[in-house]
Image 1 (tube, one colour):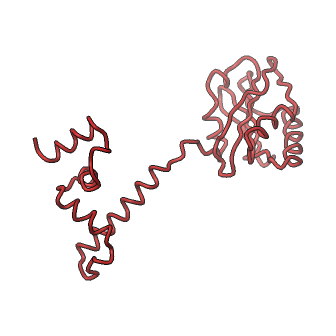
Image 2: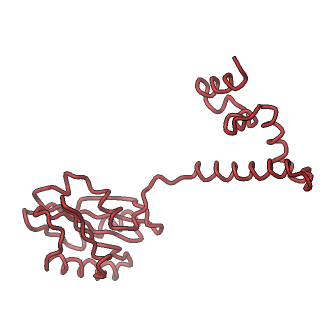
Image 3: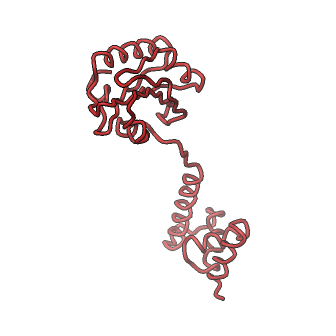
Length: 203
């Protein structure tokens, strides 16, 4: 078995902890372990690198990039960023978009516009969803939301807002201003598409 094959086999069967830094680097960069060992040593001792050596400088640069990449990928936050109406609509399952009754949902966002909580606060009738601001903002307060997005479906298939939708949005906006939890958007979804109050300049 070759050295590379041995490293891969140990990685698969015993996990990454079974390989030292140089062996891990050899696997990542597809280089011999000896070369990876030199790279690890050089990266840990930057002052010993001869600045006039282009080869050493390239090694150091690659190691800096690799360390930064590892740090970023290790700290990836899995929570989705909700910064467009399309992103909102993409979170709503088909069974809600196509439901025969109106469902009113609230998306709680943190300061980075990441989703921290999604909750259905009301299920109404065929043509109406009765929702009060306290039902919308109660989960927002519980989950320390920095902003909220209201979402509801139109069983008719037409996402165009009604007069009642516009009035409900104004009430939610005023309540959010009083609580310090702004209404970032109100998105109406349906089987045929979606409508954003924010993107139409109504928020």
